Image (tube, rainbow, N blue to C red; front, side, top):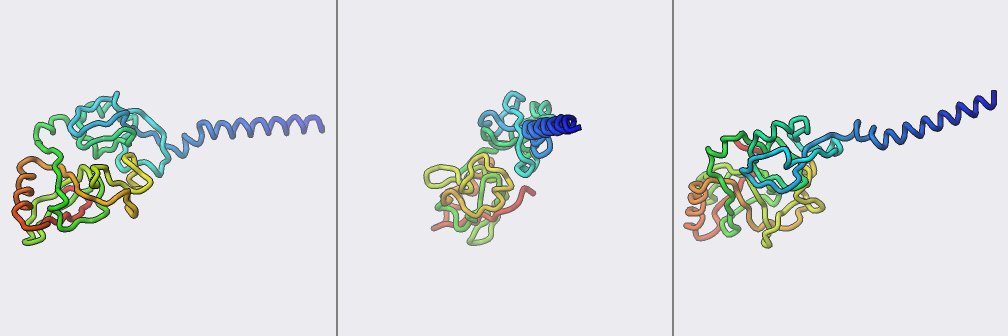
Length: 218
């Protein structure tokens, strides 16, 4: 009987060890991790997307960005156009996707809203936000635009301290400690719209534009 108990005890130890190894190797990933697509390379706005531009990675469930695209939808990606820049190793989100043919209906590009034009803006502005551009002097409205880049005086992207281009959306929501001060922003707008903003800003004797932070397009 004693010999049998030793055998059973040894067997249980081996089984427990194997289960622990299986958990660490696959179980943890299966239960706690989610598969998402990330970019293999920088992809500019307006680019025709292909499946070869992306790879599947496992990330903790609490780090999955809003609208993240699953590897199961990879075939559909090749039918889309990038609606905004996608940076290497960043998760692919639905907000990055635009139907083919939509690029023919827009002439949007990136244009700088210069520091000397801006009367007021939030220090929490980040890439991907939307702003209403309004005149400080007479309340004139110039429209709502998506922020393509938020730059410092050295033309480097302003992000949350400790993060970077690949910073997760949930981490960005706090926005308590930027990597540097904001010097200027770049908005996505067509040339006609930009020239209207530029002409007004440069006709004033000082900073005249208020960038009112919004949650999304109307």
